[in-house]
Length: 335
Image (cartoon, rainbow, N blue to C red; front, side, top):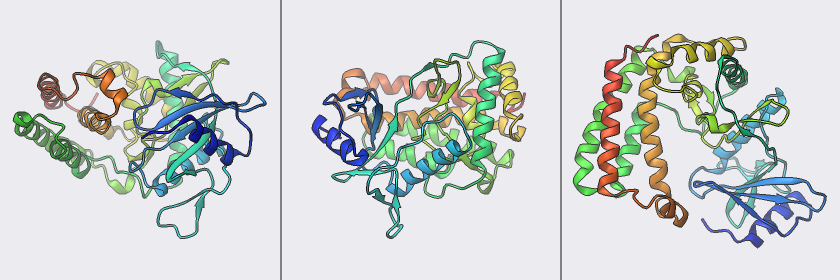
């Protein structure tokens, strides 16, 4: 996806109805294109141009609705700004998403700039604070549904992603059979763990989906800020907690209990979900490979990952997948 600085400025100025300084600062982002902007009064903005084909506009509208729900509940998130005109929601007739603009067919959103540094979970209090933040988030999550976002489950979502990695040519030809054999077997085990935990899709909630430490910022006044809802989906609550652990669940029992102590101050948690932490880690590995494969033709990605897709790369990745499969088999799924 290519956007000139002039195209970015023109789209943002038209959407906001303000004059911007002629400076566009690109931010690191592989999937979408994200830029820093400033108006003549010194107000700073973040412009996010969504990669075409990643989400339809109805799915993006669900992300924005979730952020609006969070902001209304005074959660520390950055909600998108209203734009002039709005973007027609896919399949929604004349309804328009008031926070989504259109730059020659590329949907985009504008956010007020909020600064901060990555929240470094070092001690008990940090884990309690992070757990409380996610608990507050999920308290809001349960008040509505997302119908246009993916459902986080081993089958069919991650089976399809593995098949897409092979069919797209991302996996080396002589390694495709081994890749499908390992992932197929492990995803079958993951599905069994989901079933044993009695997780029902109808009980899934809206989740952040990518709640790792880099997506929680600590601002200058010491408060926390949850950012980047681009991977929002429907799924089990544990997905937004386990990525904050320092290691495998078997080695992170104390940290998980602290997260849950903070979490359950604001909403309930089904401890049966602890049984799917390591299956979710395996699914995350596939997700990351699929995410990388979609960017592999971008010049910036190739420059930073020259080895991606080579035979040596896939030997390492397949062995890592196999190791995680063994970890799933070895752990009991409960603390």
